[in-house]
Length: 415
Image 1: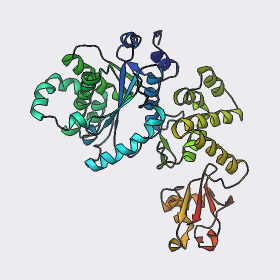
Image 2 (image 1 turned 180 degrees about the vertical axis):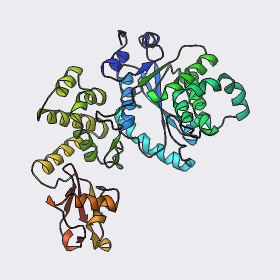
Image 3 (image 1 turned 45 degrees about the horizontal axis):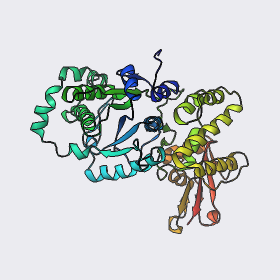
Image 4 (image 1 turned 30 degrees about the vertical axis):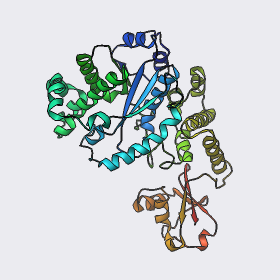
């Protein structure tokens, strides 16, 4: 884009690659230079942790605050009961209130590492839950006061809905209400907190536009929408997924070492882009590191892994993860920080196939057997060729190291 921003926030969004689209670049830019402005992103509570796919939105909130504005993290305690149908092939499974509350408690853990809620400053962040205003809505009043502002024809034209209908996949009335509820969130945040900006991934464009239209119709004043690109890696994989599942942000669901290793394994072509998006290193340094070639690009990947892990899990966790990686890969050692499976004597004897599955190196016994058959498994750094091997207490007199390929490892020990 050729627009030259006046505000620090829009400048950062453009130069670091966060910006996919905005409803009014100039209008938002002008609003941001007038003083502290609140902006929000909503996070539905569909799991106990967010994963790396949500990290771009978390970084946008962080930059909003670092450039002097007020981030609002909105937990979807209400909207999760409906489920966002955007670009999904089927309806999300409905969760109970207890499951949603449990998930919100888990999700909240990560935000304090990125965003300041407690400084007392004018731009201190807010953590809110849309159940506060959605749970007690009167249905008839809601239809009369809010529903009348929505055109079904227009809602059907949004790509997120249209793509589902074009595939002749069912879209329930429950899901169809989701975009109205998300629009209501923006209106309510504007009314209560003066929030002028909703951000999200580009798959949220239709929902965001609905919220802007509703807010403008019901409350005087300008509001804006801004979206980030939906990221895939250079090899076409969806961001946030790895060979062994989602890359969760909470340490109790994905260890800091495994998190670090995910970033260390970034493909060469993605290093510069990811440094801009997921770290706070200066732009010229990101570009310098991303342009390295040959073996030197591995040094850039270590910088990327360290910087991202510092933000999420702290400097100590990053240093420990790097030390463990060097111990495992460069010196052939075990490494104290590897994911560890602890067994009781009552669990023994156990087959090596079951151990590979239990340690998270394979998703099933079939996958573990194939790993062994294809010479992809190692036991204490030696090729594992016997798929029928049984492990007893004697074999676990000291911890053993299991490996799947060159990059994934786990320890097994007797508790």
